[in-house]
Image (tube, rainbow, N blue to C red; front, side):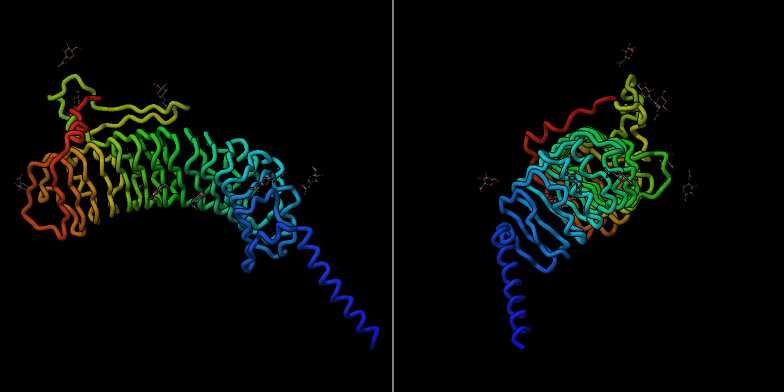
Length: 397
Ligand SMILES: *[C@@H]1O[C@H](CO)[C@@H](O)[C@H](O)[C@H]1NC(C)=O
Ligand SMILES: *[C@@H]1O[C@H](CO)[C@@H](O)[C@H](O)[C@H]1NC(C)=O
Ligand SMILES: *[C@@H]1O[C@H](CO)[C@@H](O)[C@H](O)[C@H]1NC(C)=O
Ligand SMILES: *[C@@H]1O[C@H](CO)[C@@H](O)[C@H](O)[C@H]1NC(C)=O
Ligand SMILES: *[C@@H]1O[C@H](CO)[C@@H](O)[C@H](O)[C@H]1NC(C)=O
Ligand SMILES: *[C@@H]1O[C@H](CO)[C@@H](O)[C@H](O)[C@H]1NC(C)=O
Ligand SMILES: *[C@@H]1O[C@H](CO)[C@@H](O)[C@H](O)[C@H]1NC(C)=O
Ligand SMILES: *[C@@H]1O[C@H](CO)[C@@H](O)[C@H](O)[C@H]1NC(C)=O
Ligand SMILES: *[C@@H]1O[C@H](CO)[C@@H](O)[C@H](O)[C@H]1NC(C)=O
Ligand SMILES: *[C@@H]1O[C@H](CO)[C@@H](O)[C@H](O)[C@H]1NC(C)=O
Ligand SMILES: *[C@@H]1O[C@H](CO)[C@@H](O)[C@H](O)[C@H]1NC(C)=O
């Protein structure tokens, strides 16, 4: 039938026409590469979300563009979207209010990357409002300064949060509304202390590269913390951290701090006028004052599951009595560049699973052992003067 045929051709032409116009009137589309249900639209100098992407889109990457605002209806067409990244070189700080409306139109949003957008505390609070399905959030490289209990209060499903490279100086109860939070990165900020640590569900906490002088867990909690990895390296710790009373902590990174032990100060006769306790004041609400008795080994907390202990670049002169024995499954002990003077491998009773012990760059003049420990790595070297100076005279507190 000729009529039928004409219709058929017309339909084909119509289809071709819409395809062509959609491409020509929305040149941004070609900037995106479609891989199954993912649109990769990175490095395109885009200033808005490309139109007419597939309706069943699940992931949209808009990194390294020129986006200031996500218009409030620009994501309405993609109800299946669960992963959105607008990281690096975008400028969401300029249009965060409207952007927050656009984000709220995504009922399935699970992963959001807003790193490197010059976002501050107030902007983040607005952007994250009501994003109750979020599980992964990357806010690294922004300008967050202070977090409190309102910052992430709607993110009940949050599992992983990256806050590294901000300018954070205070965190007050910020994670109390995130019962599923397992991984938290606070590296490269300006934190001075982490006290009252009570986020029992965390598995990995990274607070390296801050200015932390002391770390203490909440002492009145009888819960077992799920913490397995704690990174406090490159800080200003004076004391071994006050770890949770009950945990399964396996990896403890404490390199490049000022850690020493103070057990010897308990001997009153040598320092008659010194006090033997130290008091910590929580400058914020005075709610976390802690008085610690420095020789009391219980302040170290539960280290029974430790496998890796990295104490490189500290000021340790000796191990407190029974300290090594408290770590029966320790496999690596990294002690290089400390102030150890003697080491008796027999009396310390290292674990049978120890396979690395690095005591190079110390002041060791005596190493005693009457058993051979499997595969011991000794790297004794002459101590350079600069490091010798670092070993301070005992001071009283
Ligand atoms: C990026 O887009 C803006 C306008 O949106 C324009 O002013 C600028 O020149 C573009 N930059 C490049 C490198 O194309
Ligand atoms: C988007 O913003 C316009 C103007 O502010 C408003 O009229 C409209 O209701 C908003 N739409 C949505 C989906 O929020
Ligand atoms: C957030 O959700 C609550 C409860 O669903 C609703 O009452 C409120 O208006 C929402 N806020 C915004 C800013 O959308
Ligand atoms: C967060 O974003 C930064 C910068 O884009 C990136 O280096 C980092 O790996 C991301 N974090 C995670 C946990 O993926
Ligand atoms: C902690 O974060 C820093 C900076 O991203 C990284 O170099 C380090 O490897 C992390 N630590 C752990 C234990 O993953
Ligand atoms: C935790 O250990 C500290 C120091 O030994 C102790 O004072 C505190 O009572 C313990 N807390 C609980 C809940 O057992
Ligand atoms: C802490 O928990 C243990 C084991 O569940 C229990 O035996 C002990 O009585 C508890 N201690 C306190 C102070 O609640
Ligand atoms: C040190 O002296 C004080 C006051 O005389 C005493 O209470 C304390 O128990 C002494 N400490 C030790 C470890 O003997
Ligand atoms: C201890 O303190 C008393 C009174 O303040 C003082 O007279 C004495 O000289 C001090 N002793 C030492 C060893 O500093
Ligand atoms: C903590 O110490 C400060 C300063 O001494 C004091 O004012 C405050 O009452 C103390 N708080 C508690 C809970 O002990
Ligand atoms: C090392 O410790 C063992 C066991 O405590 C002891 O018998 C031995 O004399 C000590 N060695 C030295 C050199 O102190």
